[in-house]
Length: 311
Image (cartoon, rainbow, N blue to C red; front, side, top):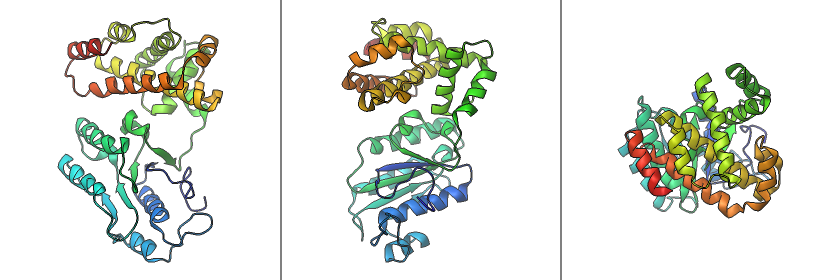
């Protein structure tokens, strides 16, 4: 829509958005526009805010009592929890509430604290109260945990085509096959993370494990993960690949569109018709739960014990 960041449709609102932009002022401006589109009492036929009603004027001025902003200064976990508790209170003068959470990838200078805070946010994104919307901002996908990414509509001004990720994959994995490079490019596009040649090889190995699971060849996926993931970093990569594969299978089952099947082997494509959407969703939730457990287990022995219980 005109004036809006790419990906936002004011006629089809969803409960949570994530604006990706390295420019703080740009993301702040776009977050305000999205909030106005939600709160406007006299929207245009296109769904865009009128800009003249009381709700629009107050949102622009930062004085609307039902538009809550956090993140412009250092945020503590206690502050975030207290702010999110307001989501369960009735609006003051509107039918809806909007929470703008700025810079969720840098709430704290400590990465571990950022992850903890995003997990606090995740709980309300999983089951948001009716009439409550969340507009999150971050500088890139890299600082946002996959479980939050899976529950938001991504909005971004910076659009990178497939060739961008293909070039990175080719440079990182020069001796890999075209098939392996394609899988790595898909992983990089999904998670937008920095990658080393060693991690790239782990990614391609993880896809082999994922395919073994979904084609039914691997009967004990967590035993396979325990054997393959020697470090916490390896375990994170494997579980991210498992979530990505499960999500791709699920979207393929729901839409029939092959663009969601990554660069699946012919064997997996032929297997997809025999995998139910329910199983794909259950698999995603299982791997997501295991991924979240990485933050709760201090070492690989503890993680291995946890995965053994889930197997």
